[in-house]
Image 1: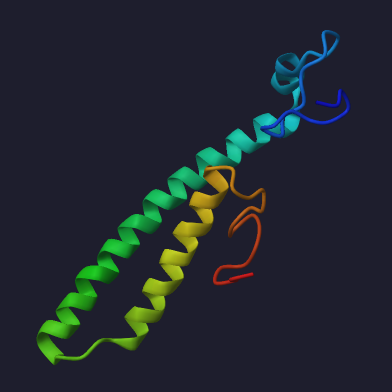
Image 2 (image 1 turned 180 degrees about the horizontal axis):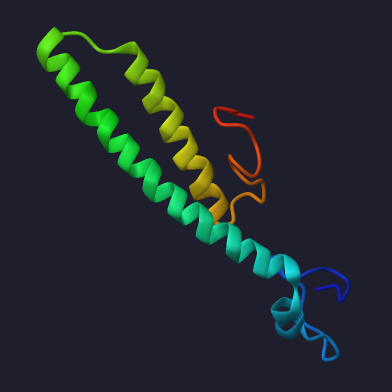
Length: 109
């Protein structure tokens, strides 16, 4: 294997002079990410409650009218998209912050 190529897992080997742990502990970006993650964790809890209310109301609408409520369906789609955006951020699958600190609510881009 060539000495200039990265390791198979895509992570470069650590040189003896670098101190990545110390750099990460001192990084303002790392600590700001933690703050945003805590805020989004609270927001996903609220969004889960909202989704639960939409589920119950949607069931009641079908029970009493026999038809799906289109407004509840749109609200449900928005909430599930928002929860997915938050989970992508919390699991480090994206660095783009969801609403209210990043992209607009309902943006699918």
